[in-house]
Every structure is written in C-alpha cells, then in structure tokens.
Length: 221
Picture 1 (cartoon, rainbow, N blue to C red):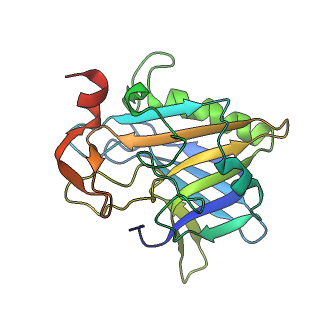
Picture 2: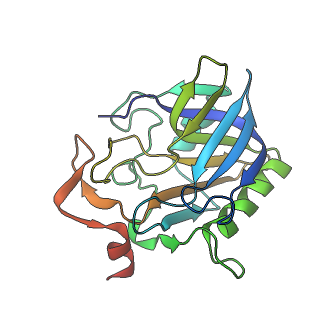
C-alpha cells in the first residue's frame, strides 16, 4: 500500500540552501523553496542517511523520456495527493513502475560532503537545481506532503520509501524529483539510502528474506 500523505507537488523552484557537513554533520538537507498557484512551500531533500552507512544512492537522467511525463504536464501547479498503489496514477516505484524509472545497479553511491570536485551528493544536486531555477523549469516533487496549522507547507521523504528495515515502507510511494524545462526536455533525479534493501514485498514494501542492501548490489561487495 502507499504511504500516508504521498503526493506529487508541481511547482516552480525559487531558491535553495544546502547544508554542509560543518553545518549539520548528522542529518543535513537541501531545503528548496518553491512557488505554485497558492502560498508555495519548501522541500526537504535528504543528502545523508542517519544509518551506519550514511551514503546515498543517486540516479540522474538528463534526457528523461517516460510515459509519466504526459501525466505530469497535465497537472496544475500545487499539491496532488496520490493514493494509487499501482501504475495507474503518477506514483513512483523504483522497482515496479513500467517502463523502469531506473536501472538499480547503475546507481552512484555518494557521500554527503567531501573535499574535491564533483565527488559528493552536493556536487551532483546543486548544479541541477541552480539550472532549474535559472531556466524557470517546472519541478515535480514526489514524497510525503504536509500542511501545518501554522500555515507552513512542504514535502519531505524525497527518496526511495521502501526496503528500510524498522521503518515505514510502502509500494508506489517512492520520492524523487522530475523537471520540465522551457525547451521541452525533461530531467529526473532519484535518491535512496545505501542501506535500503531490495527486492521488497509487493504489498508492504518491506525487505524480503532474500533482500540485500543497495550498496552490496551496486558495488558487488
């Protein structure tokens, strides 16, 4: 089943801040501010895991071509709750969506913030977001949305949301973000924690008896 409050939020990215290892060594995020037809909100994008293996798995497709884009471009700006536990809606599932969103084994495993150029998750994500803001792209954010009583709104869990032992899991509830640029091309970014396991149960999204962590699957360790 899908996770509670699972959504796709169509918006225009405005600005972002990215926490470095010095600013938050435990659970840093990229905070992306966006606008829509209402008051807008902010997205919290994990850039480090709190597990023993703190690395992330990163997939990017800067020439994204997939049937889901037709569904996305039909959406008005705003938060769209998604309840479908199959491929009939706009839900993402890294393991079940057809055609496949990602080749699981092709993921890059990256640390949060290390010295040197183009070698950590911040180095990968920041240029993509900067370009999206500069070009006034439309962003489709997938995760769990919230609308608090104080008027604040946003979306988090913008990463794979299955295969995590001891945590809430779901199918057709994966996070990530997809971008549509003014020139008509699409880009997609999908994220997971290196410790998350695959395959997963088709109903619960929990790891199965033969699951293995993504880092082992990708690195062959």
